[in-house]
Length: 123
Image (cartoon, rainbow, N blue to C red; front, side, top):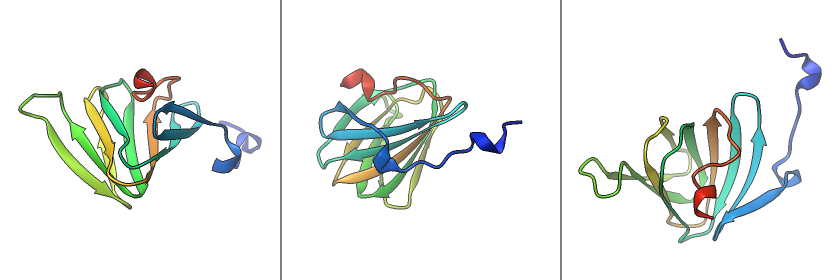
């Protein structure tokens, strides 16, 4: 069991931010079994369709996001629009895209953590 001394408090504004894509900035906390990312997207930001081995929860904190689910052009492809207080669960290997319909903040939870995610592939 981990000692309580290993527990830590973090402030988003104290964490380094990067900009892996145009109109998108990110701050991350990486743990042993999960990763939490604060994603800030400006209206019009488009994250192309991608998939990854990580399970992902996309928690919309503010704004509105449209997610495309499934392979581009497939009959299974569908779109969902989420607003503040809604969460999208993406199992591993599910193809998805994202569009910021307005300035938005999304908290993404990934398990397991990884150095690169779908937005890094399109930077």
